[in-house]
Length: 287
Image (tube, rainbow, N blue to C red; front, side):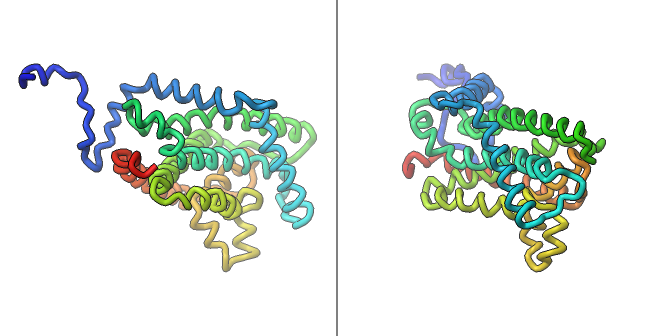
């Protein structure tokens, strides 16, 4: 084929890519496929289950009830004027979004190996679809939280929504990117080290307990100052604490803590894209 005819190709698919070549323009060209993946993730997850999307409601409610009984009734953790159940539900709702983004994206290469080996498209679309589709689950759980918020407000509970709630969507955006970056790093490592998949389930449980999901951040600093660094160096904890301040008027918003979270998110996202971009070239040899 002549050189002039080679120049007529619209796209060139090649494994020779620069390490920092993220090719975001190509992702935009495949945006229709991204929306199809989002639809697939929403429809197929609970397609053959009995309760279907009701699992979106059951899981946070039962978790909030369990935390209320154990940490507030038995351990006597004080949540101030905020009802303990609503306090826990606010933290669980935000935590669940981060957790599902992390665990789902961490399985990208293994769960999509069949598609990746047959059809070309930007591989980053797969984890991106997970982040977007999980917003649907998060929205349902947020509606449940709003329902209980209205109930407790009518019951006379001393809770208020602060004006800073306008920044709440930004916090969710940060949580999604944090889960995406962390998940892509783990997904890339799992292709060679399968043990990480088993450690992830255990690690997320430990991470939840150091994310101030079921207790105020100040409580850890007051009661266990020697171990408070476990929470203070956890970027997720600052988002959950800020969420409760915005939605319930309890706790504080740590500006330095949120800046630390944003920096951690950008660093993890950068290295996640870097490692993911490198792994996608050779992962079929190890998966």
